[in-house]
Length: 155
Image 1: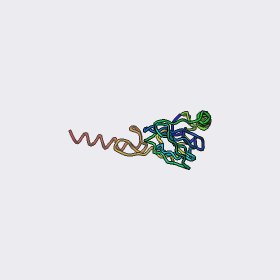
Image 2: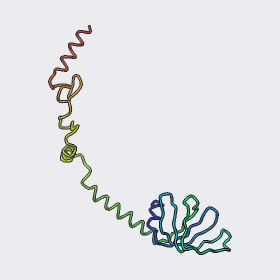
Image 3: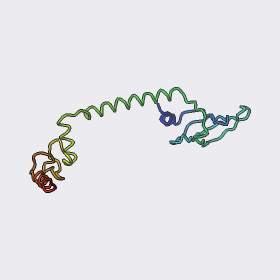
Image 4: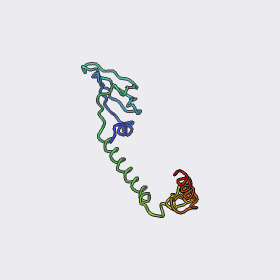
């Protein structure tokens, strides 16, 4: 379970945020971003000593100043349920994706417009000695003859 997924699930739930300087903020989570910057509403701020309190309608807390977050257990349970549901859905979606069957290969070849479909040997020709079929032996044979003539002339 990742911290950001936990925070996104905790939106509109009460939470306690303790900062590195010792202050604590109690409020309802409005939003959070990928840097763990947090917006709270209906906030009560407590000083480091615990002897002073401030009530604020809302506040913004920079993620790099956060030391500790206390989130209700019900939110943690919700995140676990979401993760299980997602893993079940992934398993069902990937049922027909794997395998190395000929049917899957043919479907992939059709989708790609038969580009570079070397399994069915309709590959691109090219280069000396490769002929038209993309194979070293066979093809037109013209490339092999030219190589043999060039080798003869070098001697």
